[in-house]
Length: 309
Ligand SMILES: Nc1ncnc2c1ncn2[C@@H]1O[C@H](COP(=O)(O)OP(=O)(O)OP(=O)(O)O)[C@@H](O)[C@H]1O
Image (cartoon, rainbow, N blue to C red; front, side, top):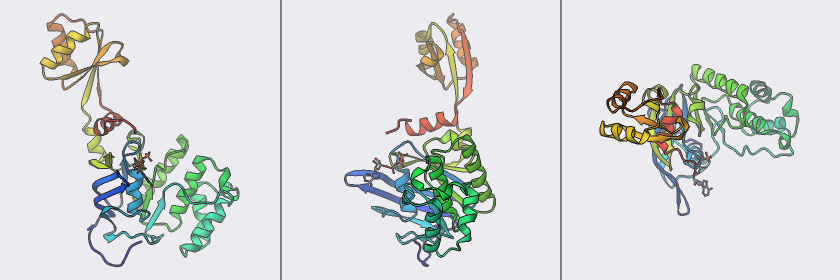
C-alpha cells in the first residue's frame, strides 16, 4: 500500500492531511487532519456515524479519499495491499468465509502475505483462539470474531496496528487482556491506532486521543490533558432550584435542572462554597451539595454534543 517515495509525515507513524470523504451527497469525513505518534497507543473517538471507520479505511488504503492524503511512516497511502510487517489492520467485516475454519482463514492470509505458516499458530496462541480456530467462523461469537480479526492483523508482527472498535463484543476480561496486549506492543516501540465510541472505557489503554464529530476534528492531544480539562460540576439538591438558578447565573455561573439530583440543579462555573454562600445570603435551604470533577465521558459529551446519530 505504500510506495518507496517518501513525501511527508516526518517522524509520525500516521499522518492524515485535509482528508475529506463524500458518499454521494453525504460527507462522512470533512477536512480532517491528525497525527499518530510512534510507540504510542492513540484512541480515535467519536459518536456513532462520526466518520471513524471511513477515515481508518482511507488510512489503510481500503477507501480512496475525495480530497486530502494519508501517510504511513511518511509514505503516501495507496490502495494496493499493505505490507503485513508494517501495517496490521482489523476493520469489520474481517473477510473470513463463514464456512471456513479460523485457522484456514489465517493460513490463506499468511500465504498471501508471504509469511511462514508457523505465524498462524503463534497469533492464535496470542489471541487465545487455539481451540476455537478449528471451528467454522460462521459459528463464532462477536468476541471470537474480534480475536480472529486481531490475529489476522498481528500475522506480520507489524510496526503499526489499526483496529476499528476492537473492544466491541469483548467481555470485561477480554477488554483487560486486549489492553495488556496493546500496552505491551507500545512498550516495545509499536504503534496502535484504535477507534471507539466510548472514551471513558478506553482511557486506561490510550496515551493520546483524537476526537471527531460529524467528520471533523474536535480535539487532539494527550489523554492526561483531556482528563485534567474536565471542569468541576456542583450538584445541588434544593426545593428552591428556580431561585438559586437565577442567583447562580447572576454570579456568572451556569445552571440547569438536574433530574438525577431529585429536583435539583447542576451548576458549572462556580465551586461548591460559592454556591453555598449565594444560597445562604438569600435564605435558600440546600439539602445536599456535591462537587465532582467532570468524568471523561462528560468531557467527551461536551466535545461532541453527545448524541449518537
Ligand atoms: N459506503 C458508504 N456509503 C454511503 N455512506 C456511507 C458509507 N460508509 C459510511 N457512510 C456514512 O458515512 C458516515 C460515517 O460513517 P462511519 O461508519 O465512518 O462512522 P463511524 O464513526 O465509524 O460510526 P460507527 O461508530 O457507528 O461505526 C455515516 O453517515 C455513514 O452512514
